[in-house]
Image (cartoon, rainbow, N blue to C red; front, side, top):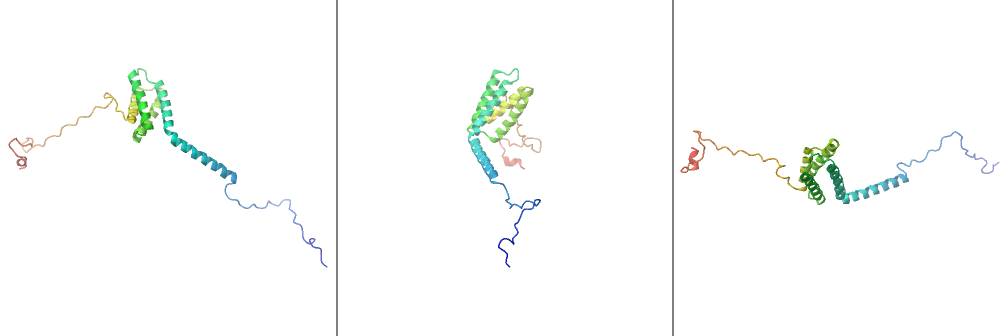
Length: 183
């Protein structure tokens, strides 16, 4: 005899303690993570472009803040001429950098002088620190420091004239030819 269709099939019932069926491996980040990463990359790109175009303004702003800090903590006994020279050096350095006329090596020297001056303002800026900073600023600006600040040029001794066999200088007498001394 034949049984009615569907009665011989057993219905698959879930077992109460059976594990969940394995999900297909998706691999990698989900869609929200990709969108979030994309937004962050776009924002970083925009910020990089803004920084490139505004770097000179940012430099000007930061140097002006440093100048204000240093001017407020000048050592006692700083003369008006030293203050004017420092202010002119700051202005000259800002103009040289923003116009693209500053030497990168001089800018590095200025950075170290600024860092030293910033650290020194905590304990008090000395005249030496002030002098070093002013010279570094003037170097970036392309201005030579005043003559009293420049080191004195070292005198090189005149070369000694070669001595002849009798201890005389080996220069020809007015009536001798240079070739007669070689003999």
